[in-house]
Length: 81
Image 1 (cartoon, helix red, strand yellow):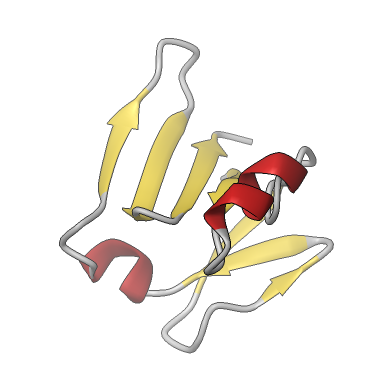
Image 2 (cartoon, one colour; image 1 turned 45 degrees about the vertical axis):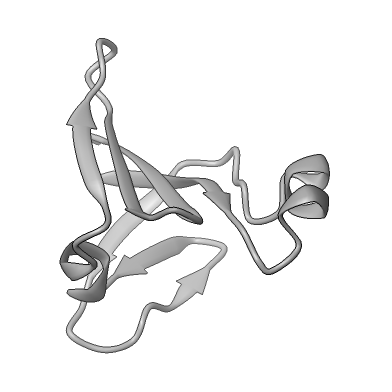
């Protein structure tokens, strides 16, 4: 599974949107762990928190990718390798 970040907002949404804060263009391997979320340039690790927020959702896109919205200020795109 490959992953990239669609958006990650801090407390300054206007600036984050203007500068694409947290957005990544490069697809990296998705890793899954019970520990805290750890990002690096070669992988992104999702934790149980990513799936337990109760404010998030996920859907399958027409191009076969999956959009995962963890909460209102964090979203990922996933695709098969």
